Amino acid sequence: MQYGNPADASVDAKALETLTDAYGERAAKLPPVAIVIAAYNEEGSVGSVVESLPRIVCGLKAEVIVVADGCADATAKEADAAGAVVCDVDVNRGQGAALRLGYRIAREGGAQYIVTTDADGQYNPAEIESMLRPVIDGTADFVTGSRRMGSEETRDPIRRAGVRFFAALVSMLTGQRISDTTFGQRVMRAEVTGAVQLEQPQYQASELLIGVITHGYRVLEVPATIHKRKVGESKKGTNPLYNLHIPGVNNIFYGCRFMRVVLGTWWRERRRRA
Image (cartoon, rainbow, N blue to C red):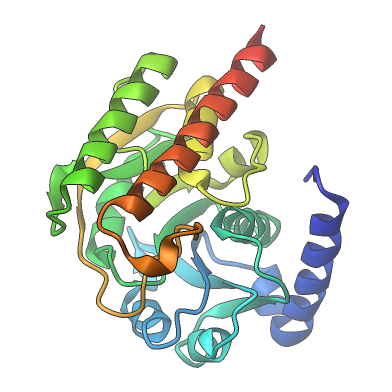
């Protein structure tokens, strides 16, 4: 794995050393399926999420890996008590950096397939099997859920409009029709995460998706469900007005940052293919 920031390599190395000391062979010899969760201050929800995840999917054994991203609460302890392999990182760097480290743990541990889901309980663990099946069958390399093909509980008009806007934008830029660019529960062959360049510390969903498409991997969307968050609050990044909770403002800041990642990734991949 290449690092744009040398500090990231040092942080990962320390976290991996701690992981090895704590879990030994369990982390070094993973079953075929690794379910990776990036968690930041998710005490009160991460334990129930870990316990709800299947340990057998499509007939294959699965292990849950939680990357606790510089948490200031008991997220790591709660996840460990619930049965996950926990990589406890000293500093908070963002969901993208945490997932990147989780992918590395999965690959180096020998997992063949990687599943991602969130620590907040918004996704349905029963839908993992329908996402994994096409990858096992060899009909897709990367499968992502789509709330627009399935269902969502939110009635936030700005968020719903944003999902549609970014789906149309990514579809136009990549030439592949995508209906939901930000769905957090997805499945991929493990080697995909090593081939695609991942450098965004936050908002990695679009970077991963665009990278996968432009590398020629077979992408499939399936109907999926997203529920309202029941515990805590979103970790999508703060802004100068974040704590004022002005309706729509936080979504607008998020959309601007997400747009920057979408366009930056597309331009980077376009130059790579030139």
